[in-house]
Image 1: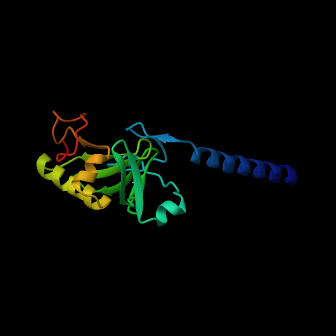
Image 2 (image 1 turned 135 degrees about the horizontal axis):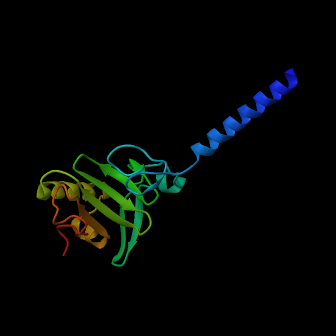
Image 3 (image 1 turned 180 degrees about the vertical axis):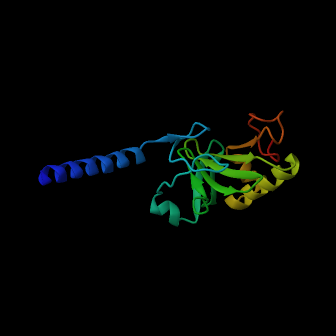
Length: 165
């Protein structure tokens, strides 16, 4: 009788542990539709992804573009988070700078402040973070996105950097 009870307790405990591991590894989904380990806050879900050591140690990263290769500061070192597609390498309450790892483009996401002032500050932060001048920045694929809270008429539009032709 005691052996049966002990075996039942062990089986229930193992099933409980197995269920816990199963549910911990299930992907979750947040309101933005991003699947993965979901973090709370204003940015989409961020999860830690290991990068090759050579990428982390390099001082610069070469970005190939249709207008030639542009060598930039290693923004992977300053990354504040990452999801399945984007590396967030600078963020404030008014803007975020992201790198799209799928198509090697950059995103300047404006979410607050007076548009002209915030856009100027965010674009300057991009130049500084990448260590490039305006000419080289214009060779990169960069999209400026504006939140509907800042300017509904520009929301959901892909704008160029203000200093590029």
